[in-house]
Length: 157
Image (cartoon, rainbow, N blue to C red; front, side, top):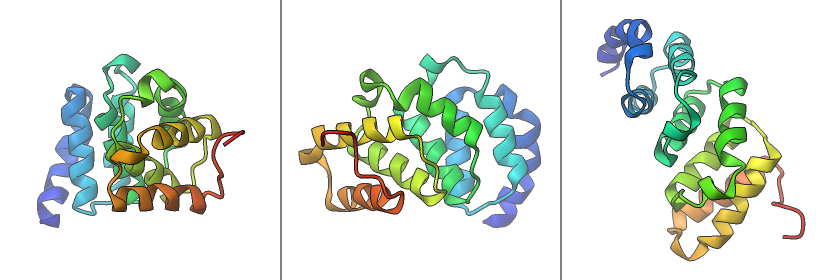
């Protein structure tokens, strides 16, 4: 399985700029699921994501990218900051995230110790709003994320 991803890494790096956003984020997810850790792949995906307007990224795209990059230990502060500022700090966007998106996103940030307080506060608010929809593993991962980052949630919680 890893040989397939090794052979596909070069075409992905060379053509990532031509991928539609959904294909790009699912490719990113697939490489991480296969535990493929070639930094060139993640750099190419990060660069390719820059060409998309913020309104083209869906919750699943954001979640998949954060989860994938973090799963392989590739911390991209510039990309993560962009996602936090343009999406994850905004209630009107985060309300579209489901419990899986919320827990995977926060878990990803905790895995690489990335903290963007306004985004994490907004994710916490949304998690509380959707608390009855969380499965046990999702709530566990969600709480774990905040604990690992030593975050308590937004002021006044």
